[in-house]
Length: 320
Image (cartoon, rainbow, N blue to C red; front, side):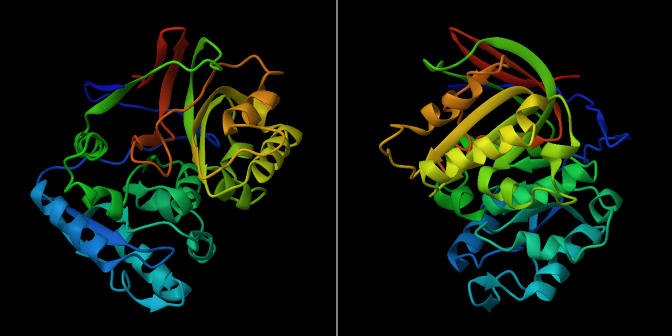
């Protein structure tokens, strides 16, 4: 696998009749806020991420309740909401990194006023339960970054390939990803808005104002998950089919679904997807490096992208 770089381009599109906003990229010396909108992170992970961000040339600042213990959460709902509002409203903060996922983002989103993220467009970085926040931002017409948070960022002191991809992306060097082929891949080339994230979290926000799978059309959908049984994942896929979501998909990126052991019906998650999407004609790639894995490539949610799948491999790049 290789990651190449493209020049900065202006991306635009339509979401609910409005132009999609790409937040400003960063400059050295900018401030990055770290917040915990969901579960409580490890203090060492937060400290390590701050060290990496400082080494990259940024000024990390912590939300007041990043490490406030409230059961399994990082503070109660009101405290987490305060940190989200502080990070996005503060004019000196140029990007917002979530400390970890877990559970609880939806609790905060329901307390924010409508249109909040569109009024304060900044890069939001995270994955897992933060998929709910990405969905809210895209639903508000703002792009965000599905990428590593504090723990993975500091695991190798920010020197691993994924962290370096994120480092370049933050200053506007848009990636072009090349991924090895998979035997179940279905070839084709499509261009559409890139959206997706954690499959269970996206299912949790179904039929809400944050349900981007219902509000968007002609999108490239990427999905990943962890610790979900193949039976549950199979139900989720069929729920997507029954809701007409797969009819809107132009291209499908199946990411990594770790800790999903084989059962009597399927040996691997890829077979679960293939059993359903074989009846559609859109391009599909499997085992794309996104999810709760070491190889978690940063992806720009809400950006227009081109997915090209050939027998030789897969490329994903952003379009001008």
